[in-house]
Length: 206
Image (cartoon, rainbow, N blue to C red; front, side, top):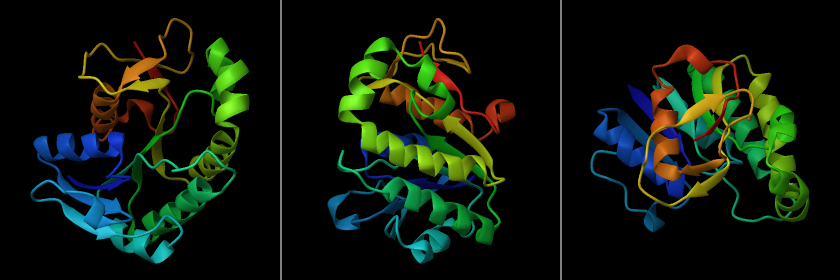
């Protein structure tokens, strides 16, 4: 499968690239600065910016699916995630690409009441308020896009080896909202060929 990975130079995006190559996918990595990232052998690298619809459109051409693990560099107020989604949706439509697996987070949109107490009372209002507001606007565009999306919502991410046993649900009841990035990457990649969560936003945990 031809797969475009947005945010390929990030911690989760880098794992997606490595694991996608290992699974035999033909990978295109979309990054802002290719000089700051060592692409695995055989990976096509496209330089571009979230705010540039042209570069996203070129990257989407010829792809079967998109994996987006894009995240902001700052916690300050901004609209970069909204801009990315607007331009990515337009680029995918133009290229005729329908399938996208997007990295979200517990606490966005209808998952807000499901977030753990610490998330709702401390993390979200004090630390990631602006990031979540931006991400919310972007996801509203994704949900309204008509694309075959799966919007994956993990909780706190750990830089540890995969442990397996990932659970996915629309309700957070019974889920432990801690997730290794390796398990997250495995779950996202599995969605490329699994239609179970198309058009839905599953929360994932253990």
